[in-house]
Image (cartoon, rainbow, N blue to C red; front, side, top):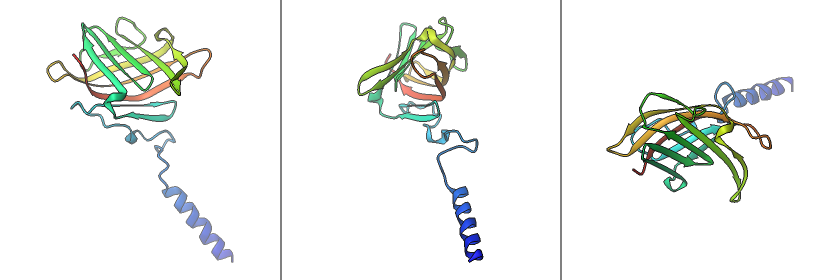
Length: 167
């Protein structure tokens, strides 16, 4: 009986160790579940928010445009703004309004529950890895943290996008 119990215990331990729980080795979300970092206009938009992965792969669920020196990307409660011309591989602060800004909203059944104004952004960065004015493609990465006294603090990490924008 003792041998059977030992066998079951070690077998169970081995199964638990080999399980894929969708987490990285550090216990965080597996960023491999996010859209890949592409620069071909795949119309993907994803991020990790407070540990949960959000993927938006339907281009009807987000909006992107670049008009009059103003770039906008919005979807999944996030509104990213770049105020001014876009350059690649240049880190834009989402706290400095001269560079850009971010707003965030939490919705439930079409009702806005929490709004995080751009002035409440604690930190954040936006980097365009590819930007084509000829092909109308914008690709990049972002992250930010924001607060609202009445709601949970929002921390967005591993944000990425590869979208076709409207000129």
